[in-house]
Length: 82
Image (cartoon, rainbow, N blue to C red; front, side):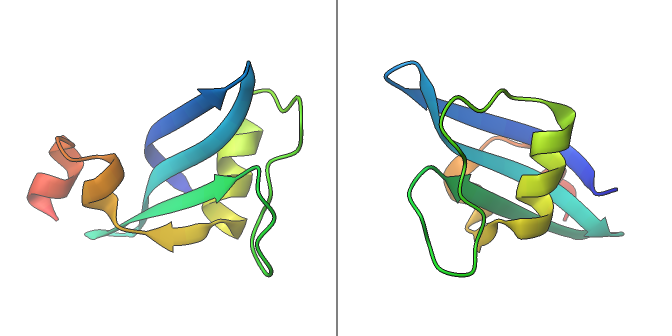
């Protein structure tokens, strides 16, 4: 299992449009991983009517696309120590 530190879930029209998780892969290696409801080759796509669960957050951490953590978690206490 991935060590998900924080999650940001964005909604559009009552459905999840994006999930971004802040994950610590190893001591001090903290990354932001995102998945959207728009298909992107090689990355996870959030299905319609997805429900936010721990399992879904784990899937995003494992199969999402790496992104800039400061864009989605600008005030995260986890990024201050990284």
